[in-house]
Length: 307
Image 1 (cartoon, rainbow, N blue to C red):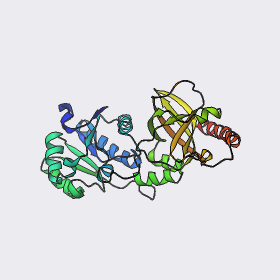
Image 2 (image 1 turned 90 degrees about the vertical axis):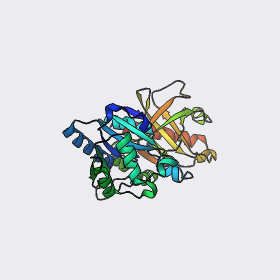
Image 3 (image 1 turned 45 degrees about the vertical axis):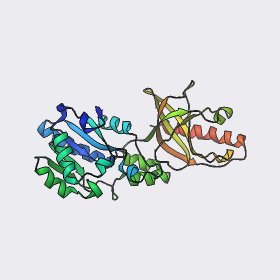
């Protein structure tokens, strides 16, 4: 799977591709319906399979002061799409130029001229172009001028539509199992391990402090997690929050790995959130906290053993 960062880098071998277009934050079950449609169309015409997304997320471009909301890093999206059989992911830079482009120019100049696509797959609520002026009907009309077919995928859901916004709400409520069900996988964050205050080590549970960056912040609390380091999988328990026992206010993700010892500083870690164990609480000193951590470790081990 190839990760491309501009239309100028689109290789000739991919011209004629069938492409799904969207933000795809979370790569959830609704998004996977679009990928299934890409495969169905590409199979009939023996065409390459491509996903076109935007980086940064348009919401971050238009409202730069928005609190963190990303469900996936770009590299995570690319990995997931590769696992789903996509040949290339094109992350179009979402900048002033792209935001000002008319719907017609977007189709004429990018989809047809630069990429040479043969077919597009979009969701029912897809909009494009300046001020989101283009919709699926206009996409069909403009695409037909270049012999670009369009498939519009209907809403996917379980009585409520699968959406990135729904996943965010579930994470904020601590409904980890429901969020993971809609994602079709454990939600994860990817970050570099940073130096912390080393209180976990003092308590007998050394933790890795993982930078949250622009990721959605789920409900503060304790989680059963599974971490991937250089391809190796390690089970653990994580604390996400402000550590009220120590009167802190900055948000931290601290991960204790059950079967790892060594230096993690500066290394990238994938943290999969498998289950929400309990809310964050304040304890009257380190000893009650140590006893609770021991109980959390056993609870996380029991859950992860089943997975």
